[in-house]
Image 1 (spheres, rainbow, N blue to C red):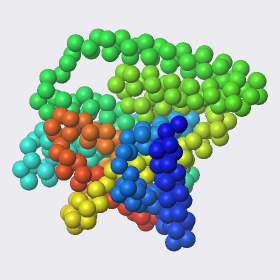
Image 2: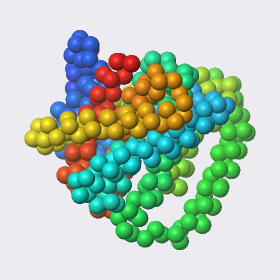
Image 3: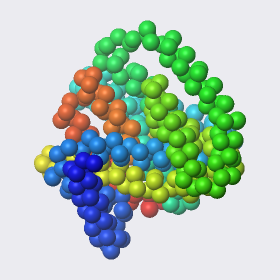
Image 4: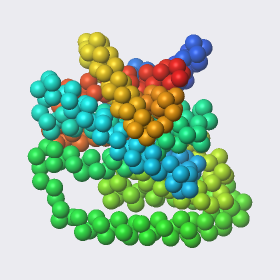
Length: 372
C-alpha cells in the first residue's frame, strides 16, 4: 500500500480528532470543526485528489440512507411541493442572482451560470440536520427533501446546458444511445426493485452471514450508482435510487443499521475535503468581500424559498424554517463550478471566491437553523 496515502489519512484523522475534542468542549458544531481541519491541513497537504474521491462516498452513502428512509408513497403525498416547489425555488433563485450580477456588468450567460451555482443547496448538510432533529417525517422535512431531490435531478439538466451557455454546440449524435441506455437502466431498476433485490436480500438474510449481507448491500448501492453515473446522471441520485429500491423490502431497517457507520465516517472526510480546497491567503485578503457576498447569497436564497413557500400556501413558520435550511450553497455546485471552469464560464479566481463564500453559507446554516 502507498505509505504516503496512509500517512496523509492518519494525519487527517488525528487532526480532526484533536479539533473536534476542542469543539466539543466549547460546544461548537462539529461540522465547522471539520471545515477547519481541512483548512489547516490544506497548508501542508499538496495532493488532495485521492482524499476528494474518498470523500464523495460520504455523499453517496447519505443519499443511499435517505432513499432507505423514504418511499414512493411518502413522495407522492408531497409531489406537488417537491416538483412545483423545486421548480419555483430554482428559477426564482437563478433569476434574482442574474439580476444582481447584471448590475455589475457580468455577461448574461455567465450571470445565468452563477445563478445555477447559487440555486442548489447542500443535501448532505440539510439532511444531516433534519435527521439529527428527527424531522424526516414532518411537513418541514418532507417538503425540504422534496425540493432537494428536485435540485439533484435539475443538476443533470444544468450540466447539459453548461456547454450551451459557453457558446458550444450540443452534441446530439449520442442522444439515441443515451436514451436507449436510460430505457435499459429503467427496466433493470424496475426488475430489481420488485423481483431481484427483495429475493437476493431474503436469501442473504437467511444465511445469517453478516459479511455476505453487507457485501450484497454495498454492491446494490455502488452498483446502481455506477450504472447511473455511466449515463451522465449524478452518482448521488443513483445512490438515492438504490436506497429507494431496498426501502420497499422487509430489510430496510437492517440495512440502515449496517450502512450508517460508513456514512458517518465518509461524510466527515467529505467536509474536511471542502476545507482542503480553501486558499487561506486569498481568504484573509478578501475576508470582507467574502462575508458580504455570503450574506447576499443567504438573503437571496431565503427570499427565493420564502416566496416559493408563500405560493405553495405553506404556514409561515414552516416557510421560514425551510428557507433557512436551504439558504446555503450545496456540494453539487462544486461539481458544476468545475464544469464552468472547463467551459470558460468561471475564472479560477472567481471559483476560489465562490468556494470561500460556500463554506461561510454552509457554516452559518447551523447557527441560523437554531434560531427557528
